[in-house]
Amino acid sequence: MTFPRPVEDEVDRLVAAWRQERPDLDVAPLEVLSRVSRLSRHLERERRAAFADHGVESWEFDVLTALRRSGEPYELSPGALLRATLVTSGTMTNRIDRLAAAGLVVRRPDPEDRRGVLVRLTPAGLERVDAAFADLLRRERELLAGLGPDERQVLAGLLRTLLVPFDASAPGTAH
Amino acid sequence: MTFPRPVEDEVDRLVAAWRQERPDLDVAPLEVLSRVSRLSRHLERERRAAFADHGVESWEFDVLTALRRSGEPYELSPGALLRATLVTSGTMTNRIDRLAAAGLVVRRPDPEDRRGVLVRLTPAGLERVDAAFADLLRRERELLAGLGPDERQVLAGLLRTLLVPFDASAPGTAH
DNA sequence: ATTCATTATCTTGATATCAAGATAAATCGT
DNA sequence: ACGATTTATCTTGATATCAAGATAATGAAT
Image (cartoon, rainbow over all chains, first blue to last red; front, top):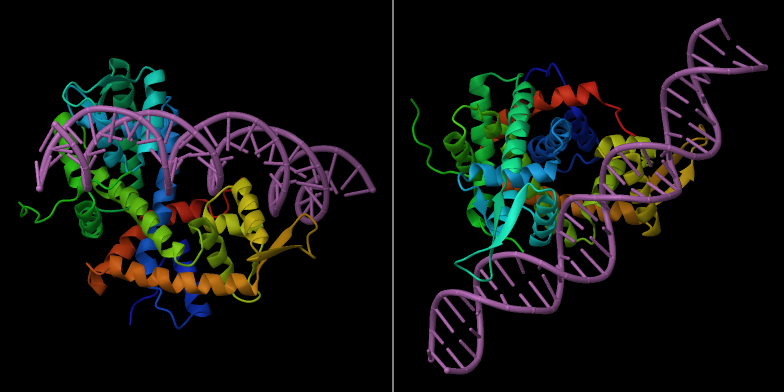
């Protein structure tokens, strides 16, 4: 026997509706996984708003940050980039094309593998991504304000448990 | 002082890279929010795979389930549907068009509001969504197998805390 | 050496999505 | 009643994405 919860979110309503309509099904998984999906959608909107101030789009940011955090010389292959961003190879080719046209990255042949290419952040790209990232962190911190430090850590740990099987089984699954 | 964690995921590596490159920034928010985004992407892939067996696409499922859990007569307005699925009105119009063409829903004018339309699940739509939903739950249960029942409940609760501000502030924000 | 499988990237064609605006009906205040 | 605002849906045009396949270089096994 548990207390009634003080506040409800959309998922509580959604789950209640399912229990009414399909009492034969165990819809408990939705309590976690629907929240993950819905929260992710909301986060994506926040990100877009944060980046708009810096003239960066969400997809650009994903690529630029992957290069930025790889450290000097801020250079990775398209393959490494698509694994970092969870997009397909066709998408990544397209993204690199556009980032290069905008002068934020440059492409050059890989000297060690003639099939390959290396993508490198330009100084303009570096500046752009650093400003946008600082702003994003500021906004994300606000979104987490409802949780205490210990709660955040617990949450991060539980999410990690769910994520490990994906990251372990397919660190290089891409087309 | 905490124990070193036994297993790492991609986000652990990502955060470590940032701490190396930008020790001046507090990147802790990523521990939670990057995991939410990445997990959501993986979940989307799983969903697609589950639905493929039932000849349903992910976006179709979202609309059909919203109708299904609304109960008899399985009928909602496009406005209610887009609020339930977090998409724009243009997207929803397009989705309804295609679902109607596939015979899974029917559209009829709202007798009480001449601006409006009502979208109703057909028997074929009902059958389709029920089969796909049962399968989805089965697969989602497996994804959560790494957590105990109490852990799932804690996780759901923490996610709810993050979600409430979004669901409260904008229960009807749509274009 | 030669074949086979793998890896790396790019190309193509189809599609779902979004933002912004158009249309039309309902509602509210005066 | 009347005009202004809000609500509900649809249309349009641009764009990012994906799946599948093409091209080409590498590596491993015989």
